[in-house]
Image 1 (cartoon, rainbow, N blue to C red):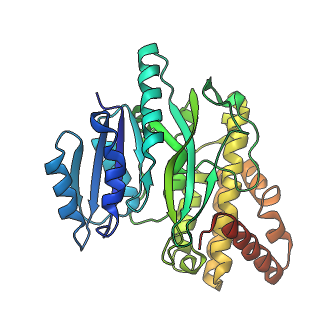
Image 2: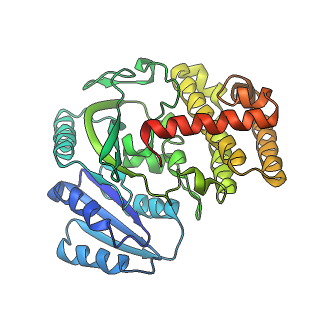
Length: 341
């Protein structure tokens, strides 16, 4: 049995995907690597086939018409045979020592029949251009190396959220929750890190720097210069997440989970507003206004939480020019901390 299925959505990735794949291959027969060639126009597909031929019991090559990052993840989930599932972007990689720790932990829990729904670990923003890094840890937010549930997590603040890079879901959880990411849409990793959470009952945090997140390229989706082109896609992701669950219902049985999910949505709304004001237009402000209306129609409690008790508050109460300055400065300050570029 494969312990972890790693999905690698790949589009025109020939320049760097070998490093990603090779970093996972150190897991040997305990891992499955699903390389999804998303309609690439370079040598990505040939490299995927090369690895599938060389490592037939570990690597799978899947070729599809271009559907975007989300459809690459969807294909990974559909084809995964591993007990757990993780996405690794083709320009990122995993740490070899940390991978062995994670695999050994999974084996131990399987022997003890105590396997959780979700493993969490640290991830590292690797700013390759100047050889610096920033580690996102969760040691102050949850117990380490013990099983725990949502009642055991502490409050998250500021930009602290779970990202795709820190999560290792039980594969069946993703299927049970019916996760289907939208095609041709950037930023869907936020949905991946949010929508399945109410289906997670047991967790285990391993304090290792597992995922290495390449950061700093001018064309990356988190770069502010790219925002102006993708505001519509960010709005789409924000709406899908806001309407995915009824947090008031979740709050009745899992108040700390509901609190975390509201916090995660607050952070994403801050980013959504930043997308709008990075290069504002009448159409973008109208789209943001419609997004607020859609959230309010779905859940007035969540609407109030996001509109008046979140990072969006200052923007909402300030005159538009001052609010725009505040949001852009705030995002740039966060960017300097983790070096988004």
